Image (cartoon, rainbow, N blue to C red; front, side, top):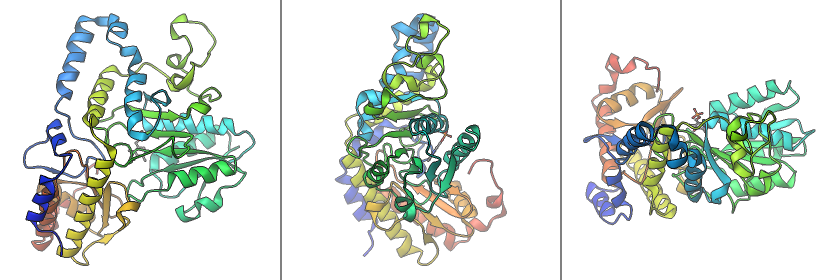
Amino acid sequence: MTATRDDCLALDAADPLAFARDRFALPPGVIYLDGNSLGPLPRATPAALAREAQDNWGQGLIRSWNTAGWIDAPLRVGARIARLIGAAPDEVVVADSTSVNLFKLASAAVALRPGRRVILSEPGNFPTDLYMLQGLSRQLGGAVELKLVPRDRIADALDETVAVLVLTHVHYTSGEMFDMAALTARAKAVGALALWDLSHSTGAVPVDLIGAGADLAVGCGYKYLNGGPGAPAFAFVARRHQAELRQPLSGWMGHAAPFAFVDDYQPAEGIARLLCGTPSVLAMAALDSGVATFDGVEMADVRAKSMSLSSLFIDLVEARLPGVFQLVSPRNAEARGSHVSLVHPQGYEIMAALIDARVIGDFRAPDRLRFGFTPLYLSHAEVFDAVATLAEILRTDRWRHPRFAVRQAVT
Ligand SMILES: *Cc1c(COP(=O)(O)O)cnc(C)c1O
């Protein structure tokens, strides 16, 4: 028996995370299933931004680098993110974008494993990850090659030629989750480093970087962390690697003494050496406010509700729309992150019609409809209503209207 709407309301009445929804300023009537791509606006963020601009920038002027703690923000916000990913506070720093951080850490990893000529990843990894690694390989004159091996053969492909294994923990379309601890151990056994992209994991599933023995990681600030469009990203370096790690973008903010203004680069102690240039202070304030939406929230509760919401979605879609979509995400919730992808040849048009009906998910080429389930603000009743809307769009063929076939720049 699939759940009724009353069953969903009963689940919502017992939801330990129900209090968190009030932390978000979601537009009324919208069911937002895309927090895995852009987290919604936290209620506290506009005031935090106004305070930063009017008080700290407007009144404090340049003094605010010291008096408002601007200069420490990358480490302070990094420490706040650390709790969500099982890292120590001094192992995480906020800087740049995920793409840039991936480049810095992959490059540093290769330098830590001289003589090894392979960066190992999987085909179909998030494009920017592959593109950045291709750029790194070119930068190194081809001395290191990017080797792509299907996920079920990654463990076997780890050998003494591999400098670094670079994987996205939760796959950006399928939602399939790697066993981080097992693959990190396997990498370690052959002397390779493991670099994890946590963009679809942070704030979505419990991550235990220390427990997994992880070496390096990066992640995104604007997805489940709700940091705002283009929010800065983060980088993690296990404490044991920090002293020897040298990253290539050796800008002054990662210098041991940026305000000594000496000619020669000397990396800062610890994680601060991952910094490059001046942090974007306003963006940092928005990210800090986004991360604060997790205050008092246990990732175990997030995980339980995420599995409940996404399993409910799959069950309802299969009950109400049998045979219409192909599920490409793992059916077993334990093996899945916090989003679900469905394949349909007219996926673009169907998603466009769904968004028009105020149920917002997204589309990933060539044919995947993607739905994110974010436990801080979504309810079971909304999942029920979203599937009812999807069923209605298919029943009435509303998606066949030509305006839904017009391709937008961003899907
Ligand atoms: C979203 C995402 C990114 C984003 O990278 P940007 O540099 O912020 O554009 C990178 N990797 C993965 C796996 C992602 O999901």
